Length: 490
Ligand code: GLN
Image (cartoon, rainbow, N blue to C red; front, top):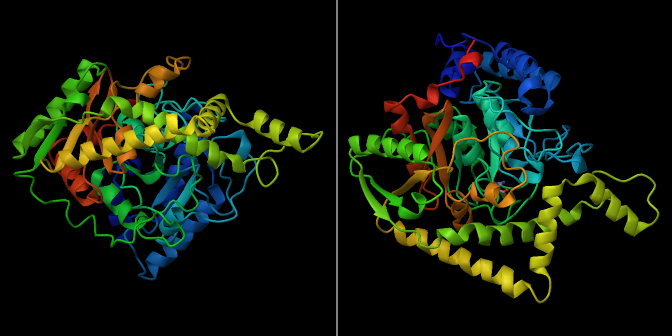
């Protein structure tokens, strides 16, 4: 058994200890519950903690292990972003609208993890309906970055990233519509993988922008991300956009040699707006790959600068449609004493959605309205196609694309709260991947001013195995992924 504290061990280490009986799932689950009790008041990662239920699940896992019925994740305590429906447990989406909503069914992805024997510790804080990049848009208040409590953890999966960095779960899940797994992973110093659109079922994941949303694992190591993806991925007849493609064993190809790997560096990702210390960190990481025998080449993704504009038409348009279901009638918040139906709709939505959600509903409704649809929505879709074609052309010459995940390290809470454009620009390197449907991953690559910085790796559609192989090899020769905040080691 490893001599590191339990909360600093990887899934791989923990599952070994569980399987050889060095520790029980009940002990491990209790360890995390104790840490959550001790640290959550300050960090605000969890919206809901499932103390009783998690101990019951741990007990069931211990019985399964005793009976020799062991799967790779049996007994592992995890936590989910609060937009995955979890049967019988509140699923708030970080919104007052769903503050009273107990999900009556389980999402396919969380159901797969449940069936694999994992234990659910609780549900994690997030920007309301996943709209945001700093976790400041949550009805439940901001999440604090474990590396420095005055700065943001990134978003929208901020609770998931911070919980990992603080050792409050062995692994977490997130969702990424424009960067929400990779950007907080970068800012909290963890591994975050957004798979290809369609790789993991979206059924039971509360929809933000359906053509962009994708779930993914947030873990300490790349090896752990492979273990999680093995279970999370797969065809689901309940999601018409999930792909009917075999799921390879992602753990099996982590150690392929990288000699001859062709890395592309998009010149548009090393341009104005990129913090020079972040750039240096990323260049140092790429130099590591050259030592492993990879070759590096400058490439161009010429439509990158249109990606934010296209995203902020398409995502709000889809959001305005998706969020119309929250009407105060069927589920969620309902205003007091409505005067009539119109008043019920207006006040239920007006009183329970936060301002960023309202902004996006208005932008999206406008962009979809008669007379503006072609000018905005159709045009944005055309740009989306050009962005995808840029990537497909680049992948004729290179195997993976690398660059920064985010232009800056995490910034102080409140610093960009009144400047939406500055906030939106924080996703400049992640958003095109979603528009193109490609898989992308952020891995810890260095530190700037005591804050973590991530390296982003992008691969062709359905090449998650390549991404994981490339990321894992970096973690074999560097130890950035093993760093933890000094005061949280104990
Ligand atoms: N920050 C982006 C936004 O606010 C992306 C969010 C996401 O990926 N869910 O929309």
